[in-house]
Image (cartoon, chains in turn purple, brown):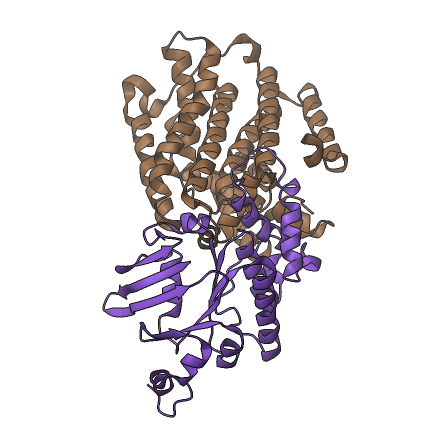
Length: 247
Length: 320
């Protein structure tokens, strides 16, 4: 469904992504791992159009999307969440998700109709599925960190995406919260038939959940394969997994 | 549609205020009627600015330019052409909105302060035209004694005309505020990057907001001519734009009705403190300092917070 081919991006002299490739099949749960500064977030920004690649292609459903602006990429069916909670802090939780649903339904520019009456069912169903329905009326900025992360995912779901890209969905969470969030992601993937691409620091989480893992190091793809394959790869062990010497 | 948005509880007090305002000219001295009319015009102007500043998060630093364009358009059409009077009244807001479209199209390509700086520059160009083109605009003298149609030429009828047009505009603005367009605009204010990622064409949305806001600024400009019967380049000067900006902050820029209060406070200060001292801006400065420290949400924002309604309702205009 999504194919990233030999993509490159430099900031001045720093090569943030230096030949990364990635394949995501429909219905898969794919993880990108790599040490800090490996270029995971940059890779995601390249896929969703926040950044434009210097070289290489991003192909989604047989279409090269690497030159499209973010809002058009979103319209193609890719939604994303961000590493830091990226919500609308002054709006209510309900409104946060509703704005996203309205955008999906092409109603963002309706001028003379009360917004309160639109997309209510869809919004509530999304809030329910991430467990935020009882907080629908609160101001988003006042939520606890874990709830803001869940809201972040809910906003992404509002677009009815086929592919959801989650940038470290469990960043800054306690182990319990991490487990809960990963369960949530798995459940959402099953119940809504989503394809999910995410990156993560926590190895245990990744190997438990992901069906395919891509390992990045210094902007380069080292390997992509099934968890076992990746675990047994000598290159990966040398460079990253539990290796005694830092690389 | 109307019943969905305006429930009796919130409309009741407004109707009462409106009726009081209708009766006031019969008891008030002429001077106060005039001041009220000026407040209506300025309130409408501040409300139109707040649409893009408070709800849209745009640094619309030179809103006065569009106000002036509306005022000059109607003044020029009434004095220099023999077209029917009402075409001038319609042309004012339309030309203002077209100017907004033109300037906005350049400005939305930039963000934040750069947006504001570019707008001040482009707006100042329009000011320079009004200031320098003596044969057309009368230069720094402006234009005076602009003939009004008899039905609104007396002071009281000008007052009623201004009041009614302002009320209609505020109702339309409120509908927009509560619409999906308004909701999305507020989301863009909070987080434009996130909006891009959920499929919203942020620049176009901002541009539409600017066009709508400048249209209303144009209406305010027309009403100014109705009340004052004259135009002058100060209307388009950037210092005046700053004053409108302050009205929004003063009243509460995250609320819907705040700018009305802000405009009323500013005009009253200028009028009544201005009688005693030329340096009324000194008082304004002190008020602003106090405001920043004690009422960061503005006067109306503070009132909403203090008296029952939740502050989040203030932000979203009372939605559940």
